[in-house]
Image (cartoon, rainbow, N blue to C red):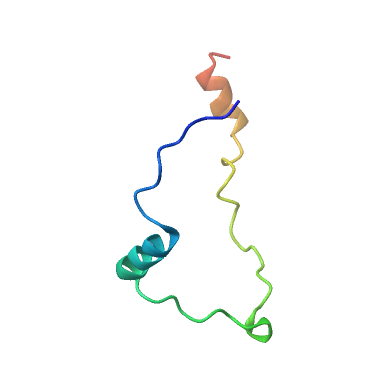
Length: 62
């Protein structure tokens, strides 16, 4: 099943130019010897905080 898509109003080169105008030049890429391993020191932000059991009971009428 093929979906018909309208043609893009810009070419890839035109999109590249527009990105450059909006964001400017990218900083140089970090070389492998400049990279460092990251260690997580704070709680993960992609998961909710663990629920307090007492508060859970109050919310559900226990």
